[in-house]
Length: 329
Ligand SMILES: C[S@@+](CC[C@H](N)C(=O)[O-])C[C@H]1O[C@@H](n2cnc3c(N)ncnc32)[C@H](O)[C@@H]1O
Image (tube, rainbow, N blue to C red; front, side):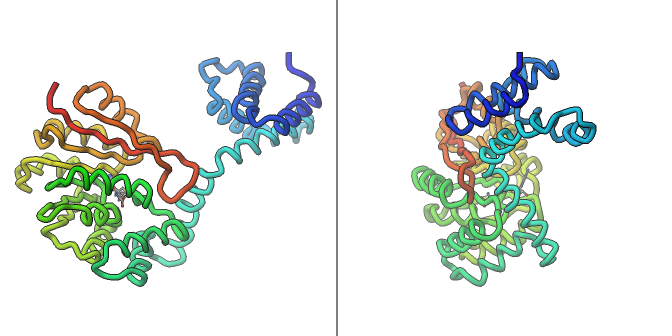
């Protein structure tokens, strides 16, 4: 039996004020029970995230009608205030990300007539020293953390990438997803002499910015070759067209749905040898569950996930997967 609306409101308010555990456990559970008894939603949806989504969706759709027709008392409506506050507090980092990555971008695209990549390039061009990769990365980091969000790997996960590149000392690197060339510069500056990066970017506008950034950092065509085509077209040609025999290091940072098919294509290509390293960004956010399931089940890799936060934002957990190819089983 549910308590009467005023009692429910009082209980919720008291518990929100008195216990932080309540935010994590009891309130979602209470919400679920409340919702379940009113809608007969199947128990399989009892996760608190699903509960939040269902309740806020239901409230959003129905509250105006219910209140207008006086079918729900204001006390019940008030009872949802703690719920909304909880959602706002828990999801604040996602709201900030949405604001910075979507709203600011739309506004500035409209105001400037340039893409956000081109705006970032203008900033880098006027604030970094040509031929100095460190100052180019620094200028990017300032722009992306203070002005506009761009999904570069960023400084924190970038340091993990630097360390893995130095540890592996690869001669041939494949990068999937160059975007503005931030990670390309990051990789290229840590390579041993004579090494080469093949960087793939399918969006010609992004590729044009990446090309300028890579050359501004001082890397010529012998060190970084930028290929403007989608990965599923280029990977099958790496041997025949580009003369590659082995990939020592692969950095995956393109669309997450391409991670698994591209990895399987690489496995089939024979370009991965024992000890080849594959690093995949964003495996926890936005996430690549099918890719992770494959590496866990295939037995082809020694692997681990380096936990970190999403680039240029606080509070959103992310991770980079490090895989070392062990050859066939
Ligand atoms: C997250 S950004 C890459 C960020 C970059 N690695 C960095 O850290 O600076 C993803 C980029 O991958 C590109 N992309 C997505 N799918 C691709 C594919 N299948 N082949 C090539 N590029 C792709 C997108 O156009 C986008 O520019």
